[in-house]
Picture 1 (cartoon, one colour):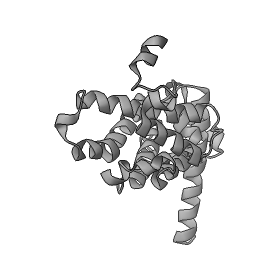
Picture 2 (cartoon, helix red, strand yellow):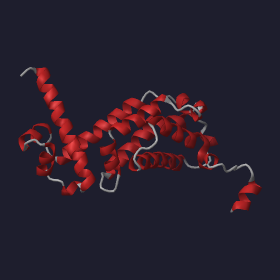
Picture 3 (cartoon, rainbow, N blue to C red):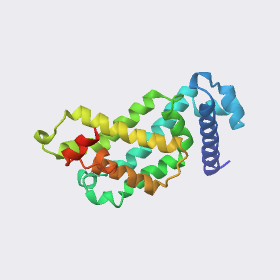
Length: 211
């Protein structure tokens, strides 16, 4: 067998294993998934599985790391000027569209791993990636004296909100396109939660009247 054929076979086998793993994670927790479950679902033998992965935990970590690396590639070149470009209120940033397209392509695994049967460590990895590649760039670009709240609370609020939106989109069946989701997230980020709901925070009388 040629090296090219062997590589293609290996990629196909890994794809089958990942798909089987994603399906099983939708049905049961990681602790209740056995290698027998995996190999039966992927229609391969145990020896083939162990050619590629040490165990299910190695499989999980490597899939997670692949996702984080792919998202890192999508976001690493975004400058703070890109992130502060308010034109994205009406036209979302291309890298944001690419991110949502990636989430859609890998929705089965990502939806499950972010859910109640998933891995809390992946949630932390995703938060760290977003913080490092996106919002830390914004923080570094502004006058620290102008920040009205402690930086760590701003970061946690915005990052958790972004992940929550992504998670809801995945769990609700991805009815909106990646372009629509990128625009929704852009509007929420640039305009804030009050303005996107139509509340005019500059009108204290109106606001007080509603409270």
